[in-house]
Picture: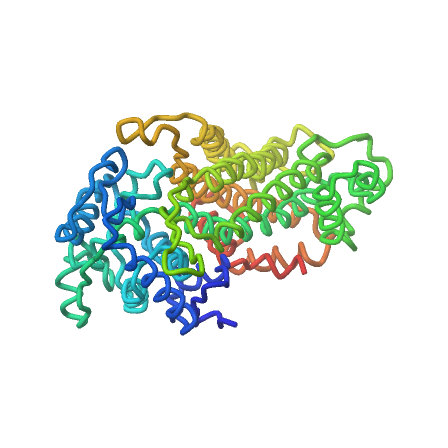
Amino acid sequence: MSEPNHIVLKPDAPLSPEQIESVARQGAHIELSNQARDTITACRTRLESVLDDGLPHYGINTGFGSLSRKQIQPDELEQLQLNLIRSHAAGVGDPLPEDVVRAMMLVLAASLSRGYSGVRPMVVEQIITLLNAGITPLVPESGSVGASGDLAPLSHTVLAMIGEGEVFYQGHRRSAAEVLREQGIQPITLVAKEGLALINGTHLMTARFALIAQDLHRVTNAALISNAMSIDAARASHGYLDPRVYQVRNQPGAARVAKTLKTLLSGSSIVESHAADDPRVQDPYSFRCSPLVLGAALDSFQSCFDRLHNELGAVTDNPLIFDTGSDVPDIVSAGCFHGMPVALPLDTLAIGISHLAGIAERRVYHMLSVFDPQSELTAFMSPKPGVMSGFMIVQYAAAAMCNELIGLATPASVANLSTCANMEDYNSFGPRSAAKAARGVQLARSIIATELLCAAEGVEAHRPHRSGEPVEQAIKLIREVVPPLSEDRSPSPDIAAIEKLIEKDAFGPLLS
């Protein structure tokens, strides 16, 4: 069993999002197990048994893609692999974040460690060496269509392994050759099949998916707290949290959210303060229907995360090398590199994220607009309406972010463009799906932070009454970084401070 700060790669053990984050963001140490080393070696031996058989084997002694019918002579196989990496390192744009690249390298190493790709152990060890040394290849963001593997991003990664291209090291962008020389790391020379094995997989989109899953889990925790906090800030009803409603609705996510909100608000004196003579019969949908909306989003997220778990135990190379029990292996060309099993869940995540954030923005609007006088709040939470604008413009900012989320919810995977002279005629565009989902999580975090800012102010406006104890603990956490609103100030630093709390999952323990 791998410890959080020490990851051991084994051929039959899938990675977890937690392990990927620990390597990508906390610098956890990685080690290749003896079992994985033996498995990789055995597969390489099977591959080498066919190198002299005179037959064409895709990517081993042939060209690539639409050039696959051209057989390569034995004395050109090393040059073939080197040329593959150099020519395919065609990414453009700003560099990917270092944590994304580190996560991608780990997912790549784990896939190769399962022993179907035909590389030598030293290739996997080189990836691990760079990760443990804190050397991160510079990888431009754009360039992968997510079908023949994440070719361009992975090629830029492999450039660093062979001593070419650029890397980030100790906060500086530098020549890979220079950094490897300083650290005493020998660049590797790729031999038959290895270049293709290194770039022919879904490792960028899968790695980014894992980090998104971790970040989204924390945003979801905060969203449940902010929802509960807004209910009492607006002096809304708790009646629609009745578990009987969700028993007959027969949707597990909705029942789970309603139960959580009811627990968070248990013991509230705010709800008791307007139990009598409240003329309102029903609350707006953003309150009353939030268990249904959030429950649907959470159920959708879980389905997507199940597909991530599958991919984190996968081999996504082509061709694959199988042991037949005889002297001759089966070398099977298929389409394991295709990213649609990852792209579709990522596109789906973006839709759920838009609802998670969108319904929170509507509650912010409700609280600040005070069209409901029974909320007993001041307009925009202003200490002196008219003279002070309070939180008026935080809702504008949230609305702007929701507008961007609407665009991000448009799937990347549904629009096809062919590549490689029409040999690769149906692509997934999964890396774009991942980039959209990652941006969606960022925006959702900001919108939920905005709701927490406003709802905390709203609950405190009803003192001496108190909300449920977990909600009060959340307000206490917020007040450690954001003071109450006594006069107009820029709300931007306040929202940013609450975002940092969300990033640290400060609100998560309140749900247990």
